[in-house]
Amino acid sequence: SISKGLAVNSADFVRELEESNNKVLLAMSTDTEVKRVDVLSLLRIALKNELEASALAAHWIPSTSELDVILGLARQVGDEAKHYRLLEARFRELGGDSDFDPRAGGYSPLFHYLTALPTSVERLAAGQFTREAIAERRNAMFIEYLLKVGDADTARIYSDIIQPDEVFHHDLGKNMLLKYAVGDQLALHALYEMAHRMVFTLIMRLTADRETAEELTIDVFQGICQRALLYD
Image 1 (cartoon, one colour):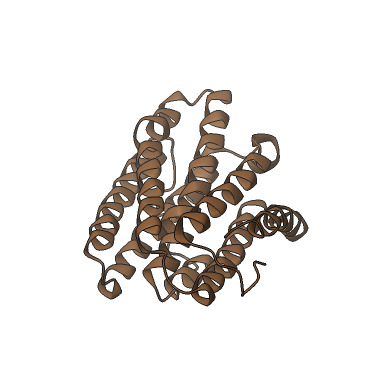
Image 2 (image 1 turned 90 degrees about the vertical axis):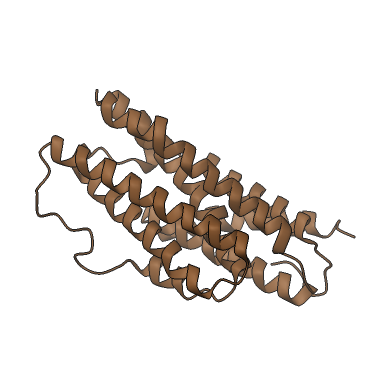
C-alpha cells in the first residue's frame, strides 16, 4: 500500500485508481468471466444487480451532504430502476418465471459492505467510480455473449440504454472524486486502502475465484505503489 507519509492529491488518487481499474478490466475476458449458461440465468443475476444498485444509491442520499452528489445519486436511482424494468420485461418475454424476486435470499454481502461506507468520497470511489467501471466491462462481455447466442434484442437493451447510463455514472464518480477527494495524507491513505479492498471484493464477486482475485489485485496495486513514490 501507499506509504502513510506520502503526499497524494486528489488528481493523483483518481488517476491511479482509474489505472488500477483499467488493468483489472483488461485482465477480464469473455472466455474466463462469462460462463456458458442460459440467458435467463444471466438475466436473473442482472436483475439482482440492478435492484441493488438502485437501492444502494437511494440508501446513500439521506446521509449525503453535497448537493451535486445527491442529485447524481438521484439520477442513478432512476437509471437503475429503468434498467430493472427493461430487463424484467425481456426476462418475461424469454419465458422467465413470473414469480422471480431478486430479493429472495437477501441482499448481497457486497451491498451491505457498500451501505456501510460513511463518506461521500468513499462511496464515490467504491460505487460510481470502481463498481460502475466494472459493470461497464461486465455488460460489454454480456453483450458479446448475447450476440454469439443470437439474442440481439437483449444485447440492444444493453448497448443502447444501459451502457450509456453506466458510462455517465462512472464519469460522475470521477468528476466528483476530483472535486471532493481532498484532505490530509492519512485520509487519502485510508481511502486508497479502501479502494484496494473494493477492487478485490468486486473481482472476487465476478470471478468466484479467490486466488485469481488476489493475484489480479496484488499485481495492480504493486505497480501503483511503485509509481506513487514519484509523487511530490
